[in-house]
Length: 202
Image (cartoon, rainbow, N blue to C red; front, side, top):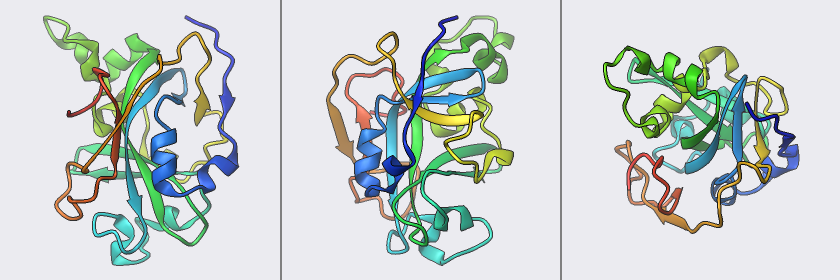
């Protein structure tokens, strides 16, 4: 296993506009315990006027983390089966966040395969299936409900600049409409690394 020197993104990083953060998070490394991956796909959800944002219905017990300080993890359960990781952005009391949609696995591949039960299959599928979706990556990286609201300055869950050993080569960012939602589908607030095979959908 590589011994990487990781420098967490500063708290100030998360204060910036959500769509800027969504683009700048691409290529950064998401670390959850002993497993990690490079972020290759994100989506922005911006405030109470965004019909696809959880804050559209106002402040609730479920979405209250979004209204808190930037630089914290907003994790919710959806479809009765999956957790989703969002990074709270902008200013306190303004509910906005970036959904982490896909990562390219870097460290902890074997434990990711076990968490995703890929070891039970007769033929091992491509490792791109480990983390090429927001629910998949949360299961693979053990991102669970108990981490909802955790600071991304913690050692359990954080985002860092990628060291040269694992950094993506120079890449182009593609901006397109969001997916997996029924409202606000016309907004081009989804971003991904062009040509990366871990992106959930091209």
